[in-house]
Image 1 (tube, rainbow, N blue to C red):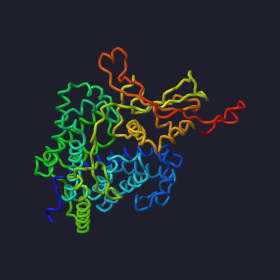
Image 2 (cartoon, one colour):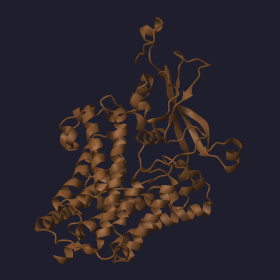
Image 3 (tube, one colour):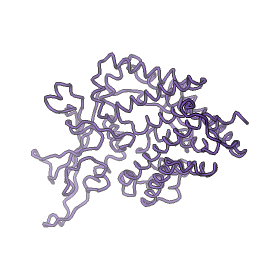
Image 4 (cartoon, rainbow, N blue to C red):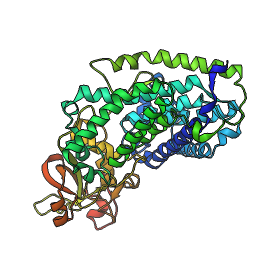
Length: 484
């Protein structure tokens, strides 16, 4: 079947695959460096507890067979190694079936991680990586030309990402329709970047243009993905530019970069790539597999497609336990005020009027008003993101904030590694508390006068001081450490 493959998309496939492998590497690295404190055996939300209370079919994965921190580390670092191999192009040196198996390996490994990640892995870009990674398995390698059906499935995925995000905005918050959301968003987004202060202070008419351009890119341009070239390439190029604008304005883990990778798979690089290299005709078994996968994705697309046209549209939802076809969306509503939970500790065994409180610093989320936000994306700081949700409502932190403070009182090394500053380097505090502050970006005059990028004011108590009892050896003059 001559129509089955698209010879001219060999470079599009190559660029997409290498970009996806980089995202995989970042995702596995994030898991390897953060899991012990978050979901490890002594973590805030231990995986063994999850496995005991949930059935296999609800979240199938490798850890259903066995879990240990050592095994999780092996899975995460193996994922890093496979990702590096894919970046280096090892799949192109293997036969078609070998390359497909190599691409299947990171998908299985990361699926297993997401299935036990709980709230720490409840973000839309987890499902997006899994859905994209699943399709990449069947995209083939340099041995054969890229299959047309899989290329169209990638466009269908990109369409749902962009169009779903556009619809959820128009339905979710009046400020998107009034073109005023960016008067607040750069300041109140989950994790501002180093340029967010400057984006926030752009003239309001520029903010209106930003919102209007976003609506065009997310509500109109996605339909052009299904038109002939070069229109489809131009549409994808606009999406790339929009995503790069978002990369500059904030930290959204690998969401923007993975969306860019999807858009790059649409662009026809033939004028730059030249004639395609010699490629063999696809074997029959490969054609059958691609047809079967296409049929599966189309069947599973019914509920996500129905969700797009629903007045009660849900965003970032999976309809199957393997995250094969999902719904996407972001910022259906915009916060008008930035609230931050500030965590503090004290060495005093009893709280009194003169108690000295020292603030813990986080790597990405705002804390010290003098610190300019840093760029971390595509790396994902999971604790920092959840702290933003906790400030919106204590309900988001109910399952993990208590264990988090316990770990601070214990001086847990893995937990402290997630933070940017530990004010108690010589031993854990005796008391920990949390308070909510309102943060706003300072103006240019304030910045010059105070050196502060943020101005903050106290709002309310989030967690009353909690303490650990003084151990017997400390009472008698020893140096031992107690537990809460």
